[in-house]
Image (tube, rainbow, N blue to C red; front, top):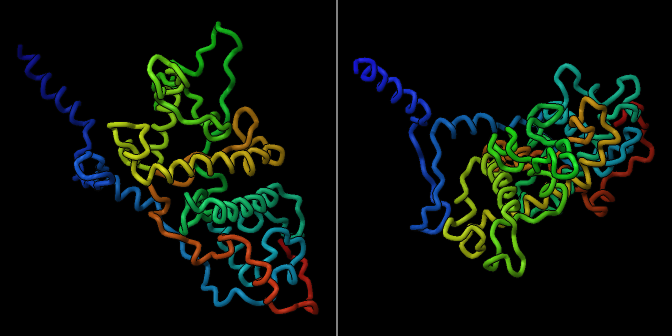
Length: 353
């Protein structure tokens, strides 16, 4: 009896250790009375705020006008609509956002010949600039006017922290084929759900589906496997944004759009954004990247929601960096480029990008 009495406090202490004892704050995100609230601990909010800081621009940009970068440097293929001053300033930001500090410009460039394309990093950087501009011009239903920059995903790392690559295929046939289930995997929080949750939705065009529109599977049956796979994906979306299911859905009817919040529409576009850039920009880089920069099956790393969001529903707290880096908002119009001062007589430097 004495032993039991001494054990009870220990068990209670162990159970309480799993509780988040920090003060809580709640935010109503759905219709009043529906219980669609987000509840966070103050400690978690402080941690997310600290992780989503924004680095200052290298120096103020006084004007976007002036001689074009193409008149000053050789082999400028993507940012050929920028003035040389704006171009140089943006390159300085790339050093802070992506390049390892010990390498700086040399991460992408041969210091003996800055115009050379011999480094794969330069080839990749060009494509990533095109991708960033594509997102900011073609995917405003998701990124709004806030937009994205390299910092949104990289945060000072050559490779973004949050990314995914393809999983090893299951054996053909029935024997030994688990269909990705009942094997611990971080993708699905080590649950028994199917672990292949990114490739069908964020690379292929499989739709998110949970419930059949009719009883007994008539007229468009949705198999239970689809619901399980969708649940696995939604777990990662929820974690990536630091929210729970009711941020988008009314639990009275998960599939009902009329009972959902506007955030669900934004998320719908976000899934298609990820699918677009994974197919058009990232997957094709597999032929350029070295093995050390690819997944275990040799495919290029791809994005999911966490790549940008990193634990908050609006990356970087919803603060736009485009006001300091307008070149990444999209190509300047041909008319604007034509108004830049002519520099036909200017000497062309060999230290070009």
